[in-house]
Every structure is written in C-alpha cells, then in structure tokens.
Amino acid sequence: MTAHRVAAFGDLEEGVGLKVDLTDHTVAIFLVDGALFALGDRCSHAEASLSEGEIFGDEVECPRHGSGFSLSTGEALTLPATKPVPVYRVWLEQGEVFLAVDE
View (cartoon, rainbow, N blue to C red):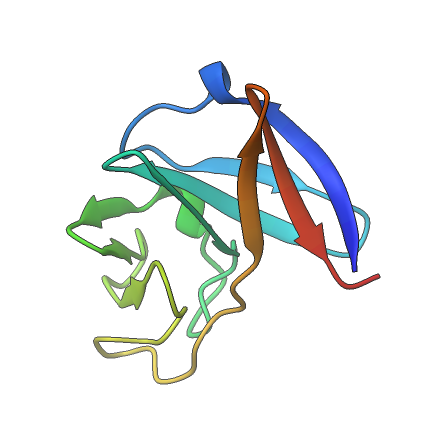
C-alpha cells in the first residue's frame, strides 16, 4: 500500500466532492461533518463521477441515475446500482490530506 499526498485540507469544501486522479485509481474525497471519506469515483452502475454527486447524511448520490452509496463502506444503498464501489483509507496529517492505495 502506498500513501499519496492528494490535497491540502483547505482544498476540501464541506459536503463537496474532490476528484483525485492517481496512476491507476480515480478517487472521490469528501469532507462530511469534519470526517474524511474516499471512494472510487466511478459509479458501479454507469459511467458517472461520484465526486459530482450530492451528499445526504452518510451517503453520496450518483448524479446520473440517483444511486446512493455509503461513504464509509462503499455499499450500493439504492437502485439502480447493486454493486459497491471501492473504499480507500484517507487521513489528515499536518494540514495535508493523504490517501492509501494498492499499487
């Protein structure tokens, strides 16, 4: 597992997704109620960016067809999606946001 510095904490906006492109991973990072979450950015149902979705409580809604995904587990919570999206470890260190990915 490799750690990547992906943003300054100040780059994050409460309840708004930040899309991060790494070599083999595209990740949506969210700041919700002071907690950081990181999910695979692509909806498991259709080609749509979850970083563009709206946050409702502890889930993000796909902007294309409205499927909800758990921010903490990546589980698909509503149809039409039935498969989860990847979840990544994300943390804050000295004002910088880091993400761990399998290389």
